[in-house]
Length: 162
Image (tube, rainbow, N blue to C red; front, side):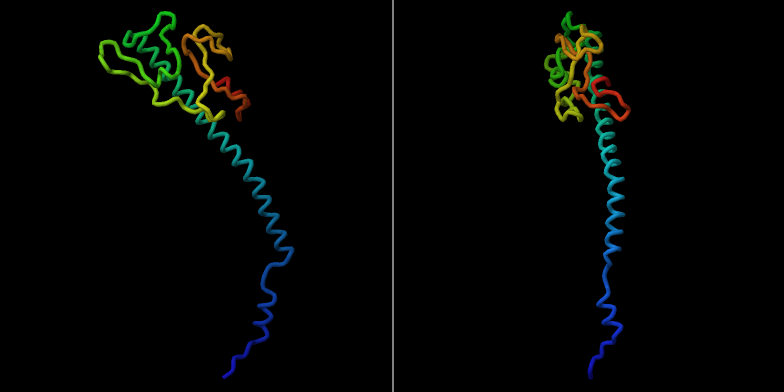
């Protein structure tokens, strides 16, 4: 018995594959899709960082407000010259002793969040005595926080103004 190979099978094996035009068309389509997808991915990454920045600023400001509230109610010791605001952000992490409690400390933050725009846990601070738009901290207390990033958001505002 012998095996006979038909001529159509040999013909199909010789001409299987892509032509140069098909390869160029496929590569062009892939390049077009990539050129559309990359800017959209960059915008999504920036949007995610902006959401995280807003969340971190809110968390820090709420911790400052809780400290101020407890100081105003006399539940924690506060200096008269600090207006009831924390002396620094580290105080919010370390905690403060509650009046009347021997060892109890009230902690306002677990850690100082990292600024997603700068990649550092270094925030701009404003004290009660500083101007509302000041970029330098006068010391004494922490009334507000802002990002030290010089970048511009998707809505064309500066991150430092948030």
